[in-house]
Image (cartoon, rainbow, N blue to C red; front, side, top):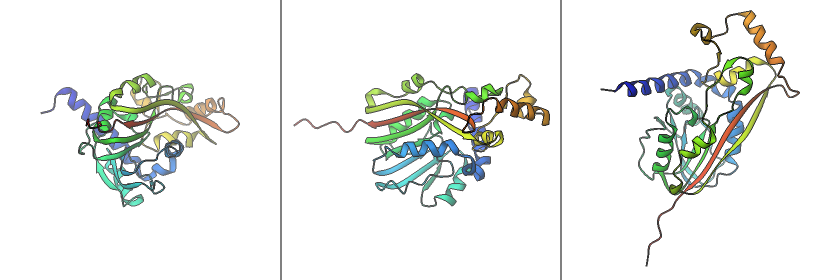
Length: 265
């Protein structure tokens, strides 16, 4: 029998899985910032062997990484894995939670995660799992949405998740486990011609946007044409020459796990 806290945890994870499953078929029409951060992560990957893609979504093409032998693609949302079977059928799908991976110790050479780990209820557990499944000298390359992201939505009167600060993310990693570890915050700004695609860049990938109000029914959706017109008017006030901005603070994590200890002769 689950305890109250366990039931709450699994309930939240089930809700997250449902939201992302519903977004699976349209995900790649709206993953604007995900494509930018993926390109950034790829620039410094130079590992070989089995790759674990944590929070794989509908799939990432790793064919440019010549050293990768095979890909285990993990996602909590079955709908995303269904799409993966279409976009990347050669990858090994695994429906699982990053905080409790059904993988053996020291079983992967590289862990890649692009804008997924911010949804973990317990990020430290997810990092501990990364450390457990990585082989000695294995690498991680992670992009995690951090505190200060989506400030433009706050200016529009919309509710924004309270993402982790850099210090909190850094504290999740056991420094004694890593011979190399860097965690830096990098700002990514994407621009949109209109407000609707801006909002769908969030909602369309499985996240949510809600009005800032104490009325639960009003949180779920804008109430009509007048509300939408007021929102678009506020959006025009923050328009820049490139378009309507949406800014993310992305924590880029790169690490190399400590290798096997040298034998003493």
